[in-house]
Image 1 (cartoon, helix red, strand yellow):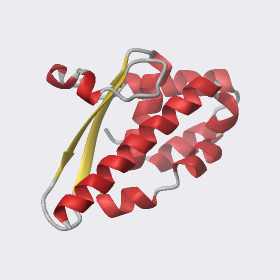
Image 2 (spheres, one colour; image 1 turned 90 degrees about the vertical axis):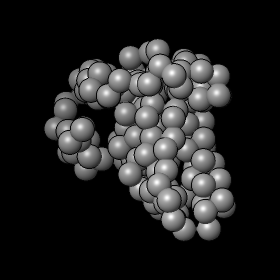
Image 3 (cartoon, one colour; image 1 turned 90 degrees about the horizontal axis):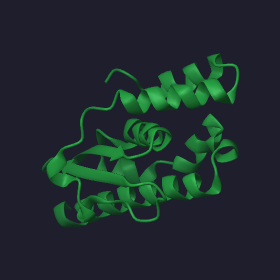
Image 4 (cartoon, rainbow, N blue to C red; image 1 turned 120 degrees about the vertical axis):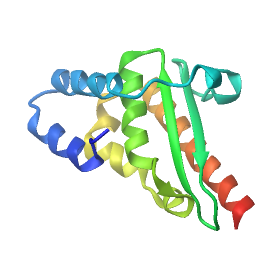
Length: 142
């Protein structure tokens, strides 16, 4: 995927209204690579999301490894939100993931004002899970 968080910021600024932004978020989700069926299970399900959300983490070796995430959801808009979180966190070192201000990103995109409370809580649950996994990896490799 060639989309970056900066691209998303720019695209959001270009789009006139939230209906167009929602369609854009859905398109981001549709562009996600296929999620591995072998990890579409309870162990990889994100708790706290109303929709079904799965998150799979891979990490490299070393003292501060890079983490890569794959994610999916059974809901179109949530799958797009998963994509935004993957752009935000995937491919970063564990220590950098722990420093990410996901709430600030949600505010900058306006998601804090335009998501239902259930979706916003689900997004926070996903961020918490990602950061907990980064913390666990850092603890075992450091």
